[in-house]
Structures are given as structure tokens and as C-alpha cells.
Image (cartoon, rainbow, N blue to C red; front, side, top):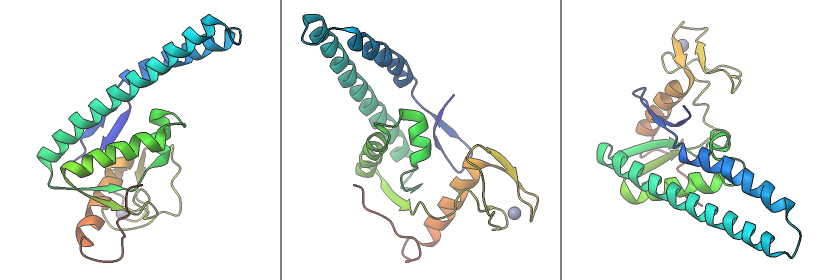
Length: 183
Ligand SMILES: [Zn+2]
């Protein structure tokens, strides 16, 4: 399972698998296209198939984003989230469309509920949500860790989500964390 979102109550929202399925088909169609002779009818056909798949994938993704944001908006009046977590997005969507896809989701979500974005330079992952101790570094591969200061054990993303929520609530009208505009 690939996680799309982790909530501070430890629940996780699964990433839609249709995209992964389409991705392998996309690779296949790309390979197919590269084998066709330039200027040939078969090459044109291969291009059309690829374009159709891109449209289908974009539609499925948008549909998923709408359903998910409806569900979240029903449950939460305000959502605090880290500003563009590019690393995680790249793992999910692939390099080329990572920023586009996540911005699209956030845009849709913002229509439906109040979204407060926390500056991505806030060390949400490295900060112990139990005692506030900040680690010097935390490798992205490490999913679970124990705080050297208070011994609390953390699941990486849940700990980060708790910190993001806390900072978001305490600074809703403050100035220490800036909420950035969506591109
Ligand atoms: Zn701690």
C-alpha cells in the first residue's frame, strides 16, 4: 500500500492504484511508440493511444481528488498540511507530474474546506511531538524512530502530522508560520 495522506489520528489514506496500473501501460505504450518508424501511420496510432491514456489518467485522478476532498471536507472544518511535500509526491506520481498532481489536489480541497499550509521548512518530521526535541537529521527512509530525549516511539508521518496540526492551531492568527499561496 502506498499512502496518499497520513492524518494525525494515525489513519492513512491509500493512494489510488489505478495510477500505478496506468503507469505500466504508459511505459508499454511509450516503448511501442519508440519502435515505430517516424512519419508512419503506426506511429501516429501509437501517439493517439498514448494521448488517450494521459487523458484517462488525468480524469481518474481528478475524480479521485474530488471524492477524497469531499470526504475530508465533510469531516474537517480546517485542514493543516505541509506545503508541497515533493519527495513523497514523486514517489507516488512519478517525477514529471508530481507537483502538478499535488497542487491540483490542494486546489480542489481548498474549494471545499479551509486549508492552512505549513511552511515546508518547519521540521515536522524531525521534531518529537511528545517532548519537542528536534533531531539533527532523520533519513527519509526511516519510517519509525525513538526519541533520544523522552524515549517516545514515533511513526514518522503520524508524528509529523501531529506537529503540523499543533503548529497550525497555535499560529492560525499568528505570524511565525506563513501560509503560502497555491501556485
Ligand atoms: Zn521526545
